[in-house]
Length: 435
Image (cartoon, rainbow, N blue to C red; front, side, top):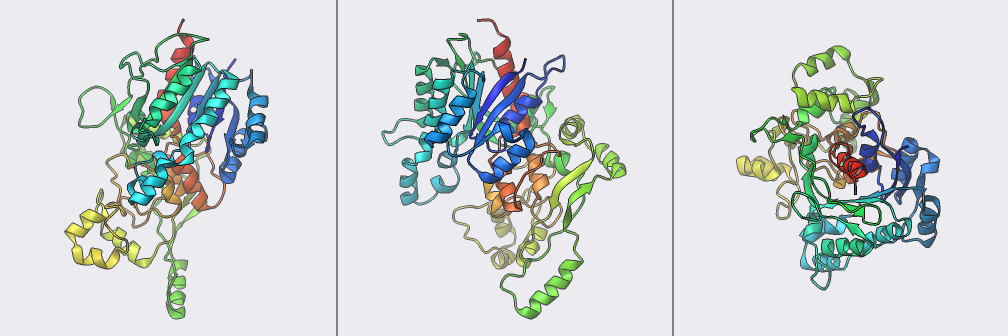
């Protein structure tokens, strides 16, 4: 029998997907989603396509009706509760990096207390194991009394009878980098795992990382690079937006756009070119490709966003790994002409990614623009499928809704491969350990 999972604040189920994809040494599936709970309509559509209608509860967990529905459907039926508690107010970018008035508002952000909904459900369901994922910023965020949010969070669960101490460090959480576990992205996240002492009393196992930075010594696989992840996808180009142009300029641009190949919603991978690509990558890249590729060889959502002409010119001029700040220092006249944003808050408002490294952290702001995710050698920002691969979603995974909403779902997700390579083995070891 599989262990049944309740996934709260599920997003598109990246955390529980990784658990479901995990297999023991006999190839047996250990974990299965019982219910996924999510408020976002488009994410719920994605979940229904993935799990089916009956496994998805759409709604706000602070609603008494939704709360009761979760309890009634899951009590006595799930052994593991997981959740990526909404993290906007914990984030070290965005509102917490703004002016003093905005910082003060976020000191009392109601989303800080959404974990209490998680807490309440855990109290009633009484699972064997809980898993909480959050951004690094939760480690420094304090409540209005000056107490760290993470200390309050863990203390509240300890009162319910959960233990969190890791056997190697003695700490009650672990800060992990997704790149250390095979994800082609540098993404630091706090993972909190608790064991119900009414079921077992034990320390949280220590899972060793599977990948390393190439500069480190040792026998581990090197980081999966951006090229390993997306280097097989066909070259495409961005069309030019016509906002703010004269009627004559619009006509010229529209004619030019007709000749631009911006990709297709569904394409088939060229087998000959793919074999050639595999010869260029090392073991870590091949293993990643084995994980993400679909059996039918189809690629969904590899379509370039349209951009302003000035942005496309800037993308072309920037070097791999270069930020807007770097470009401004190297070529001030061209930068001042092409960069429209203030450089005071974010020096990497534009960033061209590097083929030879994992990407920088993928986030939900992608729904607004992709300027921090400029393709390494094509003058455009990354596509939905490229973003999905950087988050380690398999090619068969389909995101619902318009492009902006697909980017939002991807940016908010837990990388499935982080869950499969770190969280799943950890939880599996807990299940197997004696009291």
